[in-house]
Length: 494
Image (tube, rainbow, N blue to C red; front, side, top):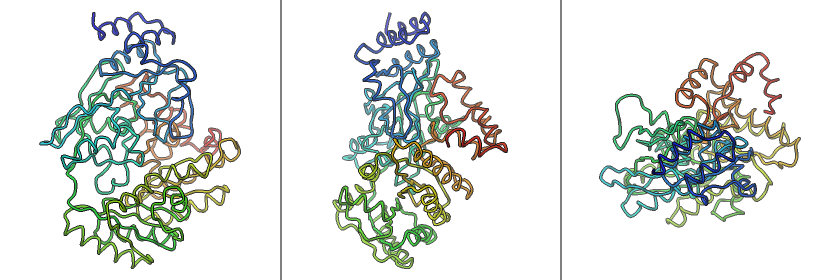
């Protein structure tokens, strides 16, 4: 009897206790591929957010068939399963319920195929984002989605959260670069959504799956687009005396008919903190900077660089610098990519928000964030994808201070409520997970959420996969959308 058949047999006769599940997982994946000691489980009780929950067991599958059999065991035992990449997520999406199973994909990290002619790659979910671009660089290709954690985050995690990154403005988020996924369903069945073709008939199951935060199925192979490297890339740094001037410049650039590949903003406090950490070349006396990247054909990029320079100066930029070498360009981006790490040096903890507003609302939301910081006596740094209005206010605090933590939660809700009020959203790329789950009724009606729940339940009716993530309970929907909204949010610690 092969391993696949043995796993199915085990699932049929499995007792419902966690020790029996752990024993079955060891027989499926190997003893060394299963962790259950408390000191090992502690490493998997958190992600890059602020919540913690200790799993009952962690298992490291090596192939899709093992994932399938793990799901058969878990479904038979009615024990929840959470798929986990590198744990760099910021919304609690990769955290297990107490006593659940974490399926960690660090051993499924192979690039299975590179199809140069069709500009596609097929990868396992544990492949680190940046490694794919490095693997195909000699072919003149790269993988466009580039989260700030791209040196560590995995493509499977990017698919689950529909991750973005600085270059989202031109190239879109992860869903725009995934054409197919091999998926293991909660009952262990393996299905294929999409493939190498740009379009397929029937429902767009690939598009539905990307961003479902592990609540529909587990991806075991992912087909992605590869892009040709641009002929020329130009990186400019717009330096402003005030954050308001920088914010107005964002809309002015797009109003001028220019679509940069990336358009990032850092406020003065944040850029000084970054500069002290990695010496990226940011001006210490600036009120804010815009990091602007243009790419494409040489003639077009040169014309756009001149136009961007003019727009920035018209909007009161005191200076616009253009990187003179690839080393200088890489250093500017190193500062942006290491921003979260830099803030970690000056505060015991920080809470990263992920609200989205229309570009025209950026000056207003920055003013609101400043008012929220004063109201709650908090330090809030601002660093975000300004081109598409995706904010990342970083709220500094000490987790050991319970009263301060409550202020952080209240400040976060104030910021996200403002984003909703001006036509935005509670997340642009970090996902909803458990941290924003109970705010969904502020954005969607009860009927909207019922439709989403019915879709999830069609695939994951017993909530074996990633329970209590993304969607609130029906009770929470009714209470938050009712007249006692503020009372409910206070009761839930939000």
